[in-house]
Image (cartoon, rainbow, N blue to C red; front, side, top):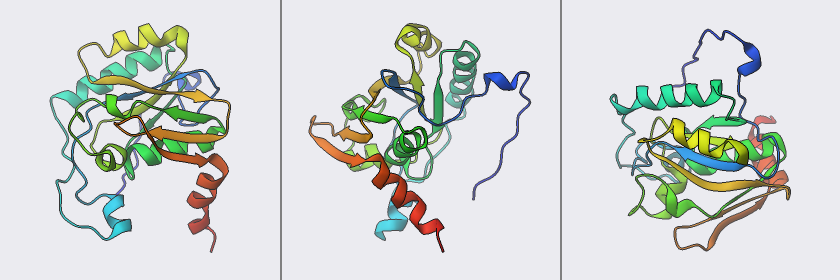
Length: 192
């Protein structure tokens, strides 16, 4: 069940949206990816059952939120999206087609916590307290400093070409899709 969230924002001009803004920026994943597909959207779509349900790390979550708040307030973040229903693959697609900016992500092997996980888990895990973040090159060092000691990895970059490409842990492309096709697949069930 999704629950709305509210927060007081002192300056609405500092709000960050999920749509990618321009080519040439880095894409970071912050947070740990775990083998947590229990109750996931992937299982719903494929009819699978079982597996571990995502668990919140109550010690790490406040640190991650504080670091993200610092990075946003510092002006280092161009866009940000949580990884929830559908995991990394869905969040990347939504960010890309929302902004009309492509993504090349050859860094699936770099996901924090996912060293021994299969690519299916890396793409669709719904582990909590994870975010995809678009960061301009001139702010990369400052952004990384905000997350010092926390799980954070550069996994790709925004590109001009209207596509989403994601390479698996072996470096071979797993996904190579046009943004228009992704957007149509996302919108089609909403037309009834």
